[in-house]
Amino acid sequence: MIVKPNCKINLGLNVVRKRMDDYHDIETVFYPLGLCDTIEITETGNGPFRFSSSGLKIPGDPAFNLCIQAYELMKEHFQIPAVNLHLEKIIPLGSGLGGGSSNAAFILKALNEMFRLGLNTRQLQAFASRLGSDCAFFIENSPAFARGRGEVLQKISLDFSGFYLLIVIPQVHVSSADAYAMIQPAKPVTSLKEIISLPVSQWKGKLINDFESPVCSRHPLIAQIRDLLYDKGAVYSSMSGSGSAVYGLFSEIPAVEGLFPGCFVWVSPRL
Image (cartoon, rainbow, N blue to C red; front, side, top):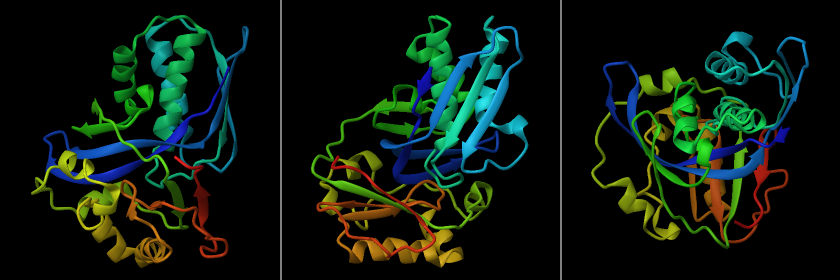
């Protein structure tokens, strides 16, 4: 089976409070995009479980790889055979786009289908939330208002028809732990749901990512990219998650060739 795990962006992000379990409660809107990795899953017969990858290099201890953890979680609860799992990594890591979480969620869905486990959406979301705070979003994979750690989801309707979306990712690593350490949690004055219901043309200055200001102070390049997107006609631009990806919404397809040397750049088709 071949699946195409896609990324997401955050539309606004409020860090509301520090929790007793050392996580934070947040409020944000997740919006799925068409930038995808590719995962191929095949049965091994009597062979062992195998994981391999190509494309972007995946650093770190394989034991913490969410693809492997997703398979092991299902193996722990169901009598499923070993598989070969190959990931073609396209979505840049550590960019705030949720690529690793998406990989894990799509593996859960694929294994459920391949081996006829009969899990419904809510059950899959419960498994996904054990793997990562935003993993559950990718089970239904449609625009959602998220709270809690990001796993409490409410579907919403967003109309971006006629817009193009541009993502720019500089070669800057932003640690999520460092980003949270720079935040003073607070309940926002205006509800994120209220702001997101406004026309996109009114979002600038209202739809805020709490991470953006402190992260930009440490990594000015991120602010420079956001400002350049506005200069080039973005109706709205923001950092996604804790960074380092910056996106802009445009009413006309933006001409950005050569503007962002050394950066990963992706332009969506008309939304």
